[in-house]
Image 1 (cartoon, rainbow, N blue to C red):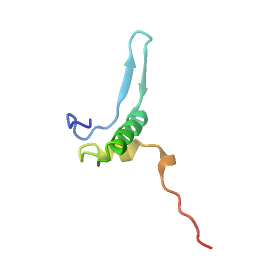
Image 2: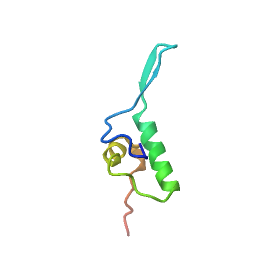
Image 3: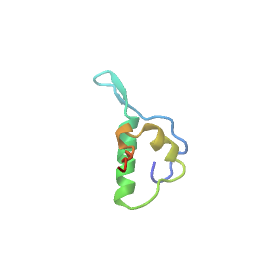
Image 4: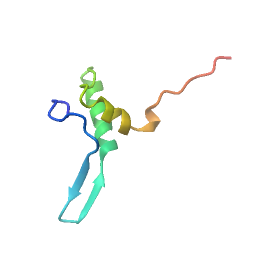
Length: 68
C-alpha cells in the first residue's frame, strides 16, 4: 500500500483456508501503515490516507486539556 500499488482500499481481510477462517485485519494494517510512515517521517500517500483514517485505532485521537 505504501508503494502505491493500491488506490482507495476499503478493507483488508486475512484468510486461512487450512483452518477455515477469515478475519478483517484493516485496523491492524492501518496501525502498521501509520507506524511505518512515522518511522520514515513521511506523510501517507493520498491513495491510502482515507483507509488509515477510517480504520486506525480510536484511542489514537488526541485528547484536549482544560486550562484552569
